[in-house]
Structure formats: C-alpha cells, structure tokens
Length: 271
Ligand SMILES: [Zn+2]
Image (cartoon, rainbow, N blue to C red):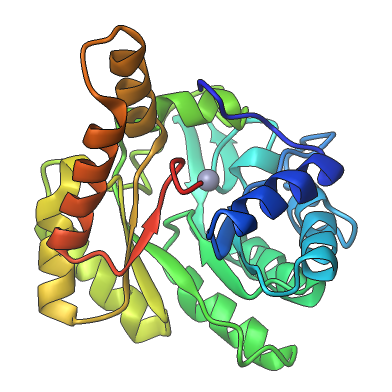
C-alpha cells in the first residue's frame, strides 16, 4: 500500500507522536508477530507485539486513545481468523474454541493498557465472551468496538498484503458476510449490541454506505465506519496518474461516510 508501512515499536512512537501533533487522537493497532502457528499464540502472548506497542504508547503518549484489533488471522500460520479443523470433506473454522482465544486476546490487550478492544473476527458469540472475560478480569470499564457488519470483500486486498494475513487456503465467507445481503447486517449488529458491544462498525465503508445509514438510523448506536485498504489504494493510484484531485476526493468520501451516519472514521488518511 503506497505510504503505509509495518512499524517497529520505536517507529510506532515516532509516527503516533506526529499523528497526535496533527490532531489525530486515536489509533487502531494491528500486530505482525515474529512467528505464526496453529493456535495464534502471538495474539495473546504477554509480551506479544501489540501488548508491547500498547504499553509503550500509553507510556509515551498517555492522552492518545489506543484501540486494538482483536483477531487471530495475523498470528495463524494459515491466515484464518479462527482455529481450523482439517477433515475428510475439507477444512472448517471452529467457532467456539476460536472465541475462547479471542477473549483471551482481548483481556491481554486490556492488561497491557488498551483503551478499547475491537474484535474483527466475526465469529458468533465473541462479543459476549469478550465482555464476560473482561468483566471477570477486572476490566469492566474497557469498551468493545465490534466489527459488527463486516463483509467478505475484495476491498481488503491491499491490507492482506500489508498485514501478511491472506488465507493460505479457502476464503473467509463462512464467517464474513455476503455483499448482497443487507438484512444479515442488521441481525449481526443487533446481536453484537445485545451481547454488549459499545460501538458497532460497518466495514468496508464507501461501497456500504447504505448499510452504514441503516445501522445508524435503526439502532442509533455509536457507529464506526472503516474505510479499507482498497478505498485508500484506489484513490492513491488515481491521484498518482493525475486523474483525480486526491485531497478533494478524500474529503468528499469521508464526508459521505459522515453523512451516512458514521460517528467514528477509521481511515488511512487520518494524519
Ligand atoms: Zn481476522
């Protein structure tokens, strides 16, 4: 992705400081571990890369709001968001054991000092499991921003390269949503709210403004829009070719997300 890099913890502090000075008050962290395995150990390791990053950000920039992405795919050798079972009829993702690891991951982020945890896996029942574990471990004040309506989307392509999380086999359609289905988004959002989500998210943003609008108007809940990697990369590419005015297109796109109901924008252009 043009202008987007993986950062070491010291580079993170430098970039986050620049962002903070520019008026960006919150960041969302994704981790790339040294080693990947079949149980995503790096996701919930006490000294995992995200846990280290959170601790140093809270130390160096205590006023910066730190949100952590809670998922397993970046830490799994196969790149799926959950535990994979190989069977005779192929592979499948095991929902419930995956949810346990996700809750463990969320707690370890909160222990490191994360202000908000953001589960992006789309497993069933994970918001409830995370809420229960956070409460049990003394983090009842840590809010959950749930990737509630997350579509299986070609718009994630550039990110998967950047985060080295492309699935080695299969795809994510057994747990992410079908682009043609708007009603399911409403059910997913309702379920996450019922399970204890404090903020609900729609992802991607620009191609799903109708979903964003419906989520905000039907639930009236704090709503985040995630403007994803291809939304970013396409505009960058168009601007590089001199076909579009980058700044004007960026402002108009983000204004559209706001207009559709986003209270929170997650965007590569924040700075
Ligand atoms: Zn994932």
